[in-house]
Amino acid sequence: MKLEFTTTATCRPKILETTYASFTSKLLGINFKKSTLYLNIDPIPINNDPQLVVKVAKKFFGNVVVNIPKEPNFCQAVRWCWCQPKGYSFFHLEDDWTLDAKLSMDLIKKRLVKGGRRCFGINLRAYKFMHNKICLSPCLVKTKIAREIALDLNPCINPEKQLRPQSYSNANGGKARAYYNIHYPISVIITDIGRKWLKKAKYERGKGLNFITWSKR
Image 1 (cartoon, rainbow, N blue to C red):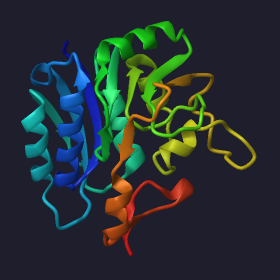
Image 2 (cartoon, rainbow, N blue to C red):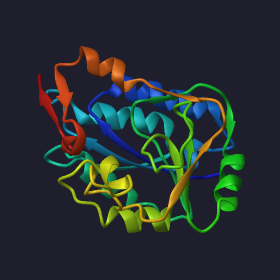
Image 3 (spheres, rainbow, N blue to C red):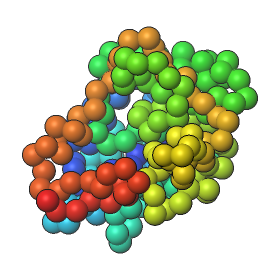
């Protein structure tokens, strides 16, 4: 099958290649050479060439649509990506995850449909604990709902905080409204490879509400 993908990336071509090599080899039932990728590349680290990231993407996807903003902004990246797809659903894949076991996209799609009207998407399970929160880890999501949420995000605030329920400690939450995600399967199946890079990098990301950009240590 053909499928649309979205990726929020920075200028880390080696990490992106690891991510795409992992998913294209283990996410079964997709013709990646006939699929479209919407790729936002935030220009950070500043001395790295974003075109090297584009080059990596074109090795794996048949059609690559690229956006390179003048300034890095994580929330704007999510907004741009989620407003691009045209089909019923798309797969959101940040640039620093690996898929650790083979998985059928057909099964994921069926679970999305069976999830009901309020089901936003199917997250591949990243952690052992159980919840139904909307996360930005690899996920098959409904395009119409994603666009609706994206257009309501405040570009000055960490999008993940905005997707969490609104509360006394998270006044900027609630943008996901009554939608929820299903985390699948029962066992952890993906790994965050960005944290290891971050420990060695000369950059650090903002914390909490401020995670929209990067700064030098």
